[in-house]
Each structure stands twice: as structure tokens, then as C-alpha cells.
Image 1 (cartoon, rainbow, N blue to C red):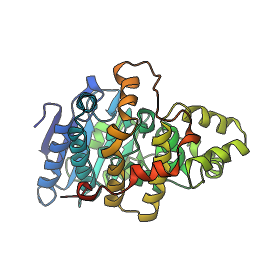
Image 2: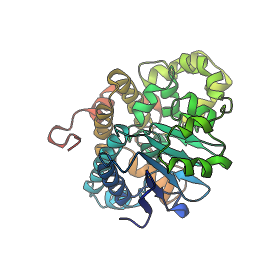
Image 3: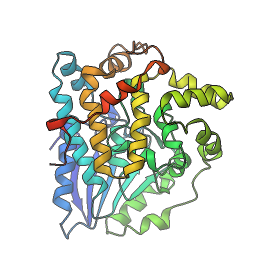
Image 4: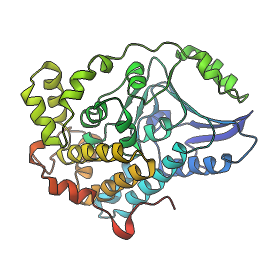
Length: 344
């Protein structure tokens, strides 16, 4: 087991605690394997009534995946490591989504990217005052993955397209409105709630829940639905241009920093996920992009600009979002033949 995670049984609960606070609990490959092994062991274990997932530190539940090694291997022309990481991580995400017992997650601070994959597929997703949830992948040349396109597709109206294209962060009220979380519990009461959960009483979550803060996204829902209802990225750009507003202008400004190719593929993936509403299909479609992301996409350049050199000035393959052709989206998302992602 990785030293970055603490997996044990306490009382009636299978407990998973992320223990990398200095790295914002970023998810490593071994952590993914350890979580999957725990889920497999506990699924049919009568001694385990529920699974509880939390994290150490004050800043983050899990700010994403640990992508340093992906970058290093990818720059060396070795794309196999990244593909294996994603394939195995996605299998764990699917098992989390379909787990036959209650899964209670405590999503404090940053919950982003890979953190969403372990924190937002549970049955009882708890947020508090510090919670900030997002799928920011388009900013590094990737698409919302780990089943994120399915979560986005289930958000009200066209909120999923907006969140996926802008990588906007959701506070607790927004996260519940967007259906990335279920319960708001003030963080001062989390320790007491966890103590009750150790006895297997998952119903304690309902008793502890309070009215969440108001959601700004809920107030903007009608405008989001209008501006982000297009079939493709170009349609969204046209709709925003034809209905100028402060909200639309801000969204365009944010989108202007993201990978055009990743955004164009994101909107297609969200639409596909909404059509099928199936975690395995969503992960399979996401993997078609991520498996190609290093060799044919903007991922390595995005990581260079954001993580390695930190110059925040990526040179994307397309100079503008309107330049991405439909054929390029199709090429990134076409089936992988014998390399298609599967659960086994």
C-alpha cells in the first residue's frame, strides 16, 4: 500500500483517508490501485456497512491526479504509462460509481479532476464551507475525465457544458445545485458525524445536513442554458457573440485561455454522456481522448505551461476555439480498436 493513503476498517466502516496534504492529496497511480483493492475487498464483506472517504490537511480533499510522471514519460515519447494510469484509474472510478454499499465522502477544500473521480461518485457526497469543486482539465489540454463527463451531463440544463468549458469552481451551494454533491454539513460538525458513521449509521448524514448556501449558478441557469445550448463549440461561440452580456464576456475570456481542441471534444463528450447515461460508456469515450492526448493533443504543452515552467502561456495546436474542425474532434474520439478501454 502507498504511504500516501490510509486504508483500514474502523467499526462498521471501511475507511479511506488521503494522506498527502503537502501535495494537496494528489492522486498517484498506486493510490488508485489501493483504492480499487479496498473496494473489491469490502464489496461483499459483511463486516463493512459503508465506506467513508476523507483526507488530511486543510486545503484539499484531492486537487487532481499526480501528473508529473505522465509528463516525464510523455516527453520521452513513452505514452504507455499515461494510458495505463488512466485505464486503471477509470476502472476504479467505475467500481466506485457502482459500489453496492453507501459511500460517504467529505469534500473539503479543493476537489478537482481526479479528486472528483473518488469524491463525487459516492452515494452521500458532503460539502462544507471550504469546498471548491471543479473539472479544470481543459486548462491543461485534457477533457473532464474519471467519469466527469457523466456528472456534467447530469447537471441541470446546460450547466455541464458551461462547467466543462470554463472549468469554473463550485462552492458548496453550486456543487449541490449541479448535482456534484448531496449534503451541506458545516465542517465544525464533521468529526461528530464521522464518529456516528463508524457505527454504520449512514442515516446520520441526513440528520446532520443543513440548508446549503445559495447557488450563484442557479440564479444564472437561464442564461447558461441559452448560451451553452449549442451542438458544438462553434455554436456556443456564436450564441455568446449574439447575446452580449457581462456573464458571456467573462465566460469567453476564461475559455480563451483553455485548449481549443480539448474544449471542442469536451462538449461532444458531455453530449454523448447525456445520450447514454452510462458510466462505462462515458469512461470509454473519455479514454479515447486521453489515450491520444499526449501524442495528438495539447496535454503535454498544457502541463508544461501550468506545472513545469509555470509560465501560464501555452502554445495550443489551434490559435482560437473557432479553428477546431469537426473532423479533428472525430479523430480524437474515434474508437481505439483493440486498445479500447474496458472494465477488465
